[in-house]
Amino acid sequence: MAVAIRLSRGGAKKRPYYRIVVSDTRSPRDGKYLEQIGTYNPMLAKGDENRVKLIEARVRYWLGVGAQPTDRVARFLDAAGIQERAARNNPQKGEPGQAAKDRAEEKAAKLAEAEEAARAAEEEAKAAAAAPAEEAPVEEAPVEEAAAEETPAEAPAEEAAAEEQSEG
Figure (cartoon, rainbow, N blue to C red):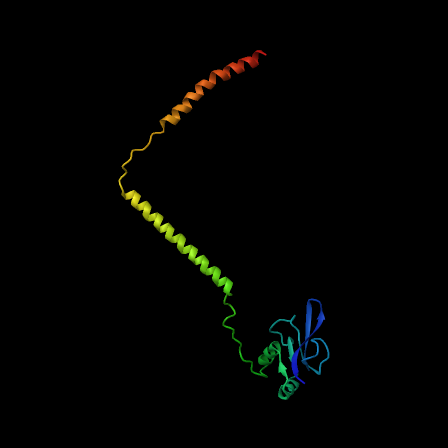
């Protein structure tokens, strides 16, 4: 029979309270257990001495018999100085997935293309500014003259319409 030292939840909704129990690994979390060897109240402050209570003699007995603590209970035992817990290290935890890496590469490629296009445009502008202007600027006078001719032609028609309305 495989034996585990784990937490069994009690308490009300949003007010957890845990028993530290020794149970068969096949039994449900809050179900039948062999022995209660401590309590854990996460609602208390971290520095409070009543947050985690352990019966040290019974914990040592069950560890000697071969009971395996869960990760959370192993942390409690390490803090109490009962059993040393090896630190875990997952170097790939913060590393992005393959899809995110592909998106980053595409974004970097697009950014490099945009920078290269901007440099090319800047060089063309410098070359155009350095070359002497050979062509004379085109005059826009004909467009202005056409606009000036339309205005007087409309004015007599508007005056005639205004006179007809005032008479009638």
